[in-house]
Each structure stands twice: as structure tokens, then as C-alpha cells.
Image 1 (cartoon, rainbow, N blue to C red):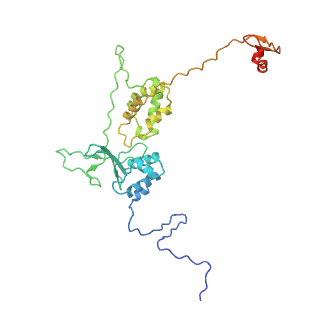
Image 2: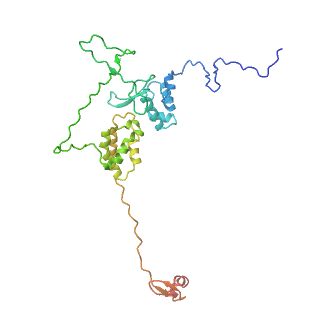
Image 3: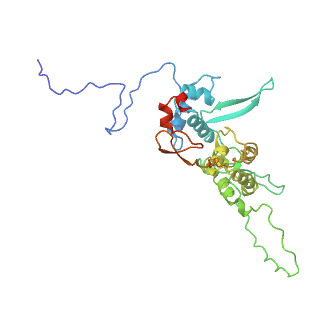
Length: 318
């Protein structure tokens, strides 16, 4: 009979593949004949997406066709809350894993249809959310004199690399202005010095949401409306919250949205603070001597003091 060893080698588990690093992950794999979803590593190991966005994308890909994936339905299903879910949906939409399109039904009702892409599609890059795809430009039509056909890239889509810009021709120096020549008209879009605070606020909105990036012309045009908010007593934090809270999922014109909110949500001016009424000054009564105890007290008419009136009945006092 063989001797029992105190430290026998553990039996090997066929489903487990050991790793060389003790701290690394060890997969315990199992066969799943049904109820599974194929998700690509390009999503699960995405270098930019947050963990909330990756988990939400995996959940959406596992749902059947027609399942509701709006913010309210997802907030009732998960404990993250509407703000985090809305931010994760915008991440997926930015990186091409989600596309929300407003469509009109046969009855004329406008609904938002959500398309979940198992492979990311091309989307225009948003500032601050990732790198933009390499710009491609359609191949121009060859002239009649050209003999060679346009070259196609390795994708075979008929796209070519961008054409390098033409060399810039130096401009001729401007002629010196004459003394009798009238001054050029002032720039109509230049902000008033009174609107400097409003210009700073509007230009910094893109720090809160990259979709609220405004052009210089829009900032100068909307600055007087923000100054009107400051004139009625609203602070900068109040204006920023009004312009950035509850933004729609698809924001096509940020300048139009900001102009609408500044115009329609302008609060009334703060009421003037009224001082409390001053206490009325009453003349002090003269000093009197009590008819009962000869103690001095103030009263409008001569008589007895308060203590004597308390102990002497009214009939005796009379």
C-alpha cells in the first residue's frame, strides 16, 4: 500500500487554464448552449469608454428587438441614475456604438428610434471626446486629357488621401491710408466692454459639455442676453445651470438652444429690500407718588401704583 503524502498535488480542473502570473485573471469557462450574447473585444476593452458605458452597451446588445432603452427605462432598471445613464449613452453615441434618430410614423407622430451597432460606425468627432477619423475626400473626376484612372485606397471604396493645400501667395501690402479718407466702419459683432463677463461665461460653456462650443460670432451675439440676466440679479452659477441642465440627446444647434433659454427663462428683477418700520417713539409719562404707599411710579394720571391696585379692591380704591 502506497504511503499517503501530506501535501498532494491538487487535481487539475479541465475548464481552467492556469496563467504564469499569480495575480492575473484566470478564466473558468463553461459551455453555454443558449442565452448568450456575442460582444466584441473592441467594445469590452475600449481604451476611451467609461466602465458604465461599456456595461450599458453590453446590456443593450443583449436585449431583444423592440426593448425600451430610453433613459427613464434604464434608470428604473439600474441604480446609476438618469445623469450617469444619459452621459453613458452620449459616450456610446459619440464613439459610434449607438445612434438615435428621430423618425415620423405613419400616424404622423415623431418618435426616437435607437440603433445599437455591434460594430462602431463612422461618426463625426466631437471636441474633447476622442480622436477624429482620418479625413477622406472623394477622388475628383479626371479631365479629358488625363489617361490614368483615379487610384483607390486599400479599402476599395474610391476614396483617396486629402489633396495637399495650394501654396499660399503672399498678399500685397496695403496702401497707406490718406488723411482725408474716412475711418473704416467698426465691427458690429465686437462685444461691448460691459459684456466682458458674459463673453467669458459663454466661451467657457464647452468645459461643461463639449457640444456647447460656440463660435466667436455667436458668443458676441448672445452676450447682451446674458448681461440682462446679470442685471436682474442672477449669478454666473444660475446662468450656467439654466443653459446646461436637461440638454437633449441630439443637439443640432447649441446657439439656438442657448438663445431660446436666455430669452424665455429670464427671471424678474429682485424686489427691493424694505427696511422694517421703526418703532414709534411714545412720550414717557411723568412721575407720580402713589396715594397708598407713597412710592414713585410713572402714570398718565395720579392714583395708586400697580401693587396697591392689586391688593385694594376696586370699591375701596374708588
